[in-house]
Image (tube, rainbow, N blue to C red; front, side, top):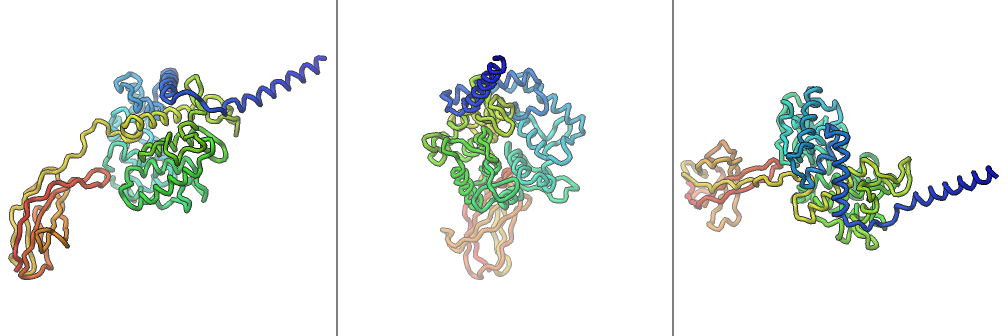
Length: 431
């Protein structure tokens, strides 16, 4: 009798376990903004209990980008511990994993702190070493670019670095690893959802470049094709919350609504709907909805961190705020340089003229445009550095009258030029 009862009990437990493993597969009816607030409360409690210390960067970033008061003690505690940690390791957070620096720079930027002076150490200098960044593969390159662009940081010039990092190098390194089908992967020839989405997050600010736009369009289509019929994504064969999160962040960075755009809605279920199926009413997120690969369908730390800042990214998109990793909020945009003024234009030698102009404050350089007609059709352009206030133009046609105008420009950290107004047009007859 006891053996029979025990068998029935075991059978009941197995059935219950079987039912539980599928109980979380149903769609969540909780609105995303309600889940956002509950998860914020859940994460805040977790941080307060464990301590706002180095290593909690993603939770700190999520809370800061959700609009939390940056004067809260929680953020001060985190910063103080980062300073303590950086000092203790003499500025070396990790000898090889440079994503440690990228992640910390992002968190510090989110709370309004300067990563170029953390206890006397400049964390941005670590990202000046292109070879060390690449050691982690495409992952290192992606996050270095995202971190540097978070506040348009200028990449420091560091002595002794074999290959100096530039944004162009980072971009080309990422583009060079795109797979034939449009996706990206840590290794191999099969596209991975997470890495493809992260690559898009890094490339999003550069879609004005034709080669980047082409690569981005292919990667977006790849992610659309990889989405499952229930709106979710899987990675390594397992449906999970984090892969959906990275897709949501990528789309919002590109100005695409992952909750409505038809490319990310399958059978009426969007990527946002897919993420919400992993939401737990307690305020966290599950990594999986069905037990897999040793993970039970319960609240998971990493899934909750990512689920939260994924919702923050979507909420910022809905409310037309800067994207998750664009932390230039409230900063004044780069001001256009003043209108240039030509001080003299002469031709003293055959087939040559010399143009001089007045210095424009904060100019990064100057552009000189000249033509044989006042409408500047078929014009030519030459440039001059910021320290130069004159330009000699040669190989002109003798006896021809040339029309000339000058303008100054400023260059931001990404290499984009912002031009001032052209000077008044002047003309000169070339000897």
